[in-house]
Length: 301
Image (cartoon, rainbow, N blue to C red; front, side, top):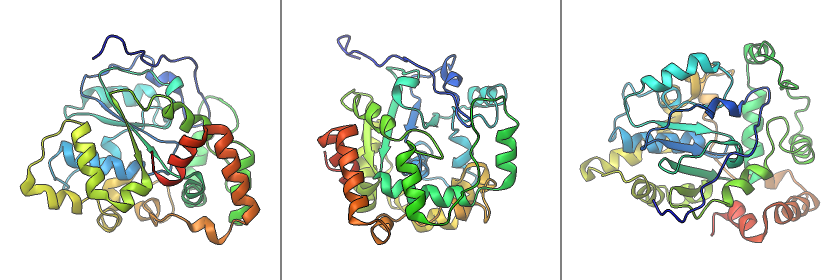
């Protein structure tokens, strides 16, 4: 690639109860690796499914996407278990991360897809993820070497209160939100970075899939295109959720279908007050700048 490009360099570690950025430090990249990055609950699983359709040319049977596309920085399982599994994969690898780019080892040859979603929509999806997490997951995280406070069960069923906790405590009970979006927005013009948006996928999934396929330099067998699109629809993924969800959905009550939940936006509009909305939008502008805040809210660049 162009020798004049300034590539991102890792400048810090991000280590907490569930994530460890050092897992990437000795990672052996391949030139065709694909990295799917999000803050979380922003369409990660959806984009993993789409990418899998390009790699495996429409196949779905026997394709456990949620397990094949590993969350590299997740501390379960530990690195010594995960590393040989990653190195043994013979297909084009498509991996996921929830790290901001400044805490990630960045390869000029890999392809990076960042998926954005309005933070308010992500919070509603996060609540479903959090409230349905099974006891054994909390226990397993507690047993890991200490890297700070471990996530606890939700303390409220009030969604407005849950939103305020997330807003006032920097992405609580997960990881900082604004810095994640801001860091990836800053590298959006690199030739190996593509910015996708959840709302655009909902508005025109087929069109966004075409753009993504071109970015990944994947040839498409047009005779299989309709089938590929079908396999990426919400209804298909919901009915085949065990293949899409991490660990076949075993982390959540109700299994994989709980993980692949509603796939809808704007649920916050019936709960947040006008003051809440103004507070969020003002903060978005301050944290991200007007252009990034607009993209995050609408998908428009």
